[in-house]
Image 1 (cartoon, rainbow, N blue to C red):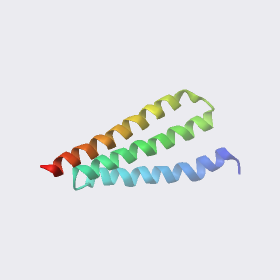
Image 2 (cartoon, rainbow, N blue to C red):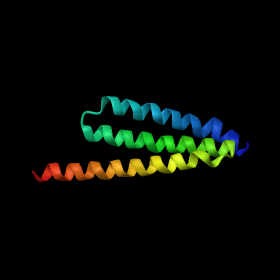
Image 3 (cartoon, one colour):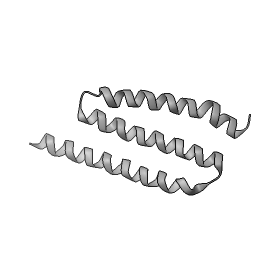
Image 4 (tube, rainbow, N blue to C red):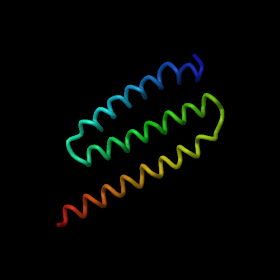
Length: 90
């Protein structure tokens, strides 16, 4: 079993199942915090899919997109924690 077979037949189906479950949590999340955390996790899982694509195709052009998505996910998590902290102080 080569690395590409391992990525295609094991890792990608696991990531797709995770995306489906995370998207369900995003739709059904009772609070805004749950929805933002689910969106952050969707972005992180998308980064994993982009990384697998770049490994398989040996083209590193999408790694810049993955790094920008990681920065956006990090900043959204920081903004959420700042919002929750300010909300609890009032």
